[in-house]
Amino acid sequence: MDDTLLTIAGPDWEARLAAADGGGLTALRHRGRDVLVPAPEGARLGGPFGAFWMIPWANRLDGGRLGLHRLPMNRPQDGTAIHGLSRDRPWRVAERSASRVALVQDVAEAPYRYAARLVVAAEEERLLLDLAVSNTGEEALPFGAGWHPWFVRPLGTRLSFRATHRCTHDARCLPVSAEPDSGLDGGEEAILGLDTHFAGWDGVARIAWPGLVLTMTASGALATNLQVYAPRDRAVLCVEPSSHLPDAANRPDLAPLGPMRVLAPGGTLSGRIGLECSHAPGGTA
Image (cartoon, rainbow, N blue to C red; front, top):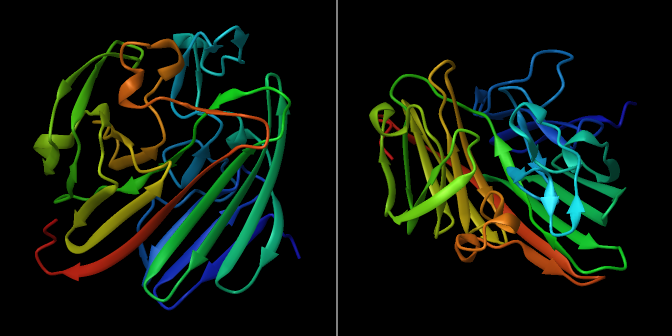
């Protein structure tokens, strides 16, 4: 049996995971209906499909700078280190049942040394994602995490959530300012073209499709900040819970809206994401 390709299922949910490909989801269905854009056969995660984890930072770091440290710039065209280290590395299967899987990962790339544990469980009515990241190094360092799903975006999609601030950004999608903002509640006219960060998120977001409403509920470290991406050139919607502001390590004026967490050796950052769906004939969030 190939333990790097996994399927778990419950009464309502079916999830397919690629342990060897960053521990991400290659497909997620609710009662047979795709919630995420399914990954093409054999394709690596990171394209406009599936979902992957961003650890030990989420989104972009300008110049790969983290204090005195420099991290590899995996997006050289805009001079940033993007989406962390874990998504490019395999995870190991620690536990597995028909409806639940636990994956673990140990990463050592200077200046980071950390251990991550991810549990994905298809419960009776919801899908749960539980993440814990522990600093196994000898130095206190800033840590962060986020989840990057590529949801389907058919005609009639709506998104709603509450926040306290919306960030403006430069051409590289690095935040430059933040203004008070109550969040979003709208359809294509409100979301199309966004690649925008929201701070002060209350941990709940709803995506309404024709006939189905998905409620995402985050807690712990993943319940403070939200990145929304809705490109004009493809029918996808990314609603990304994260523990901090993009480039928070290099934005002292904005970092209070979502700082990275400094973990002492042995310290842990943890968070949970729950997904539930309800049927709504009008598809109203």
